[in-house]
Length: 157
Image (tube, helix red, strand yellow):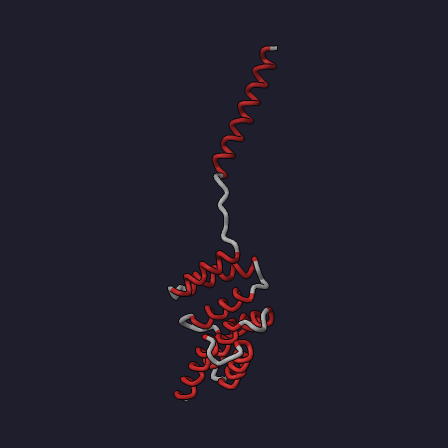
């Protein structure tokens, strides 16, 4: 009887020790940022022109929220603003942003600027027209910025 009791106690202690060692290895759960928080982190990285970090955050955000026009717009912006711009990827994300939200003022402005980089001012002007319709005037920030970019482009070319 004593050996049966001792065996049970030993088995219980072994099991308890295994649970303790497992618990010590796992540690507390770390909460990952959600898509909205990643978008904020990307905006901070963009302000610092940290394109690598911006791409990392935005790519994680787009996996979580693939139908988020703001995420696609900033992905396009980030691809366009890198030291070596990736215009095909920028256009891909601007197109997605505008398909998700045809009235996305930022995407219209930025894709227009991308068309100027691609030497297609007539395409940029189409987005300027869209911005005038969306804004209802020629004074909203996105319209004014794209109009200035088009004027500067024409002055240089």
